[in-house]
Length: 149
Ligand SMILES: NC(=O)c1ccc[n+]([C@@H]2O[C@H](COP(=O)([O-])OP(=O)(O)OC[C@H]3O[C@@H](n4cnc5c(N)ncnc54)[C@H](OP(=O)(O)O)[C@@H]3O)[C@@H](O)[C@H]2O)c1
Image (cartoon, rainbow, N blue to C red; front, side):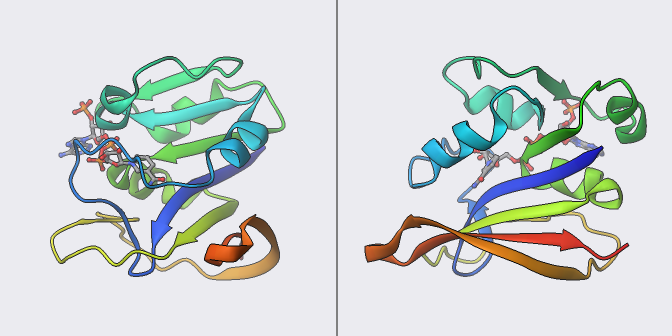
């Protein structure tokens, strides 16, 4: 099964100003909807708390600290699933990721903001797959990478 990290990222690699921020600056929501539709989406409890509604058409799995990522993944029936955040959850699932879909936005957040990975224990090497247009006038594209196994 493909395990795909999907995130909106600033030019300095941040995903939010803090753990409570509702990310209103992301421009790739329609792409996010299209790519995740019909698949399981895994998120941490802080991210779940920022959502104003359920993500329709997708199995929503909210993870807590006592849940082992490998057990969460083993219970999913499908060819792919998405890890949709936040920083702690991206870090916890890092050893299992097969792909990263990152949409870089023209924003630089100040120090102390939440990085894509807040608790990463190992480096991840990537192969570039392709680029998907989000907003060409603003230079916003989604970069798709495959994790080198
Ligand atoms: N830009 C983007 O694309 C994007 C995407 C998603 C989210 N976000 C933003 O990211 C922010 C949330 O990210 P986050 O990293 O704070 O939270 P998170 O990953 O959404 O949730 C925190 C997770 O870490 C667990 N946890 C807490 N303490 C732990 C510990 N000591 N050891 C192991 N696990 C622990 C929590 O479990 P418990 O439930 O047991 O506490 C929960 O599963 C929000 O502002 C959200 O809007 C941005």
